[in-house]
Image 1 (tube, one colour):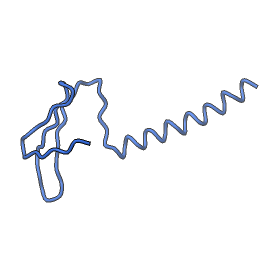
Image 2 (cartoon, one colour):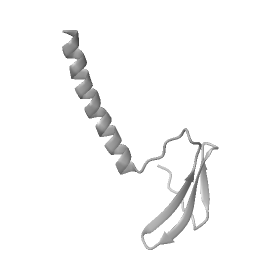
Image 3 (tube, helix red, strand yellow):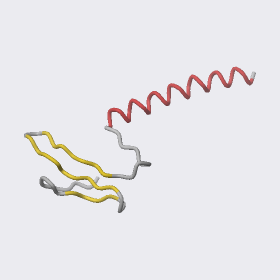
Image 4 (cartoon, helix red, strand yellow):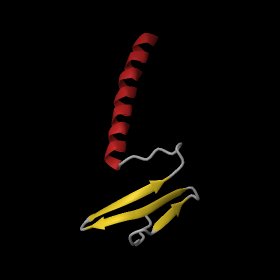
Length: 71
């Protein structure tokens, strides 16, 4: 993991096409802005993990049904 210090209105660039900017700092909260191409999905980590779990559950259920149909 790369750890960087940034101040309000400072940014960093990832892979030449993603820009992360510090918009506001209030106490222990930091508001960031992310500029990226539309084809790059951006999720909060907790939402991403929920999506991954839902996909795994769906695959398990679909996989069982597909196996049942084979036999």
